[in-house]
Image 1 (cartoon, rainbow, N blue to C red):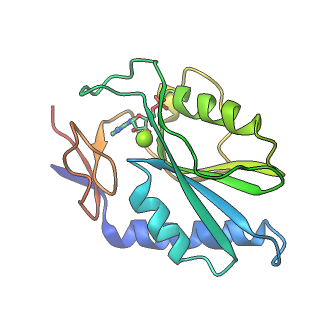
Image 2 (tube, protein in one colour):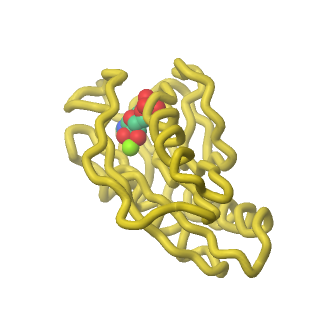
Length: 170
Ligand code: IMP
Ligand code: MG
């Protein structure tokens, strides 16, 4: 496995992103983070710990990938949010934007719940794979078209616990 982004590099970037996000919202406003399970859980936990704003959080689970490295283009809701979004500053926290299909689906269903603002933060982006033009306001790293694992990202449910991001050898 080749390490693409080591733990220190990721930690530094996540802290910078947290700062960027906090500068974009009034200091007294609460930010509601919606983590996308399961891939986004590590990014979410590091991001919230780097923030000093008032935050609340929730999780949603969707499935877009079977046990394969290719996107099926199919998105299914597995677990909905616990609370409503009306009038809240919502940020979707996701591991990676690849084709963009998952985030397009998520943004549509969450927008329909009338948040005050809705933005998206992704640790990784693979722009060369995009099938739909989706807005992602906060991006940690832009990477090449490689299948990566670690820091929340899996291959067949493995490798999520790695503290770094690595390219899985075919
Ligand atoms: P999209 O709908 O094609 O943008 O896919 C997004 C989802 O696919 C992410 O939330 C990941 O769960 C998964 N995914 C995309 N690329 C990778 C990768 O390189 N490694 C692991 N999971 C990936
Ligand atoms: Mg995911």
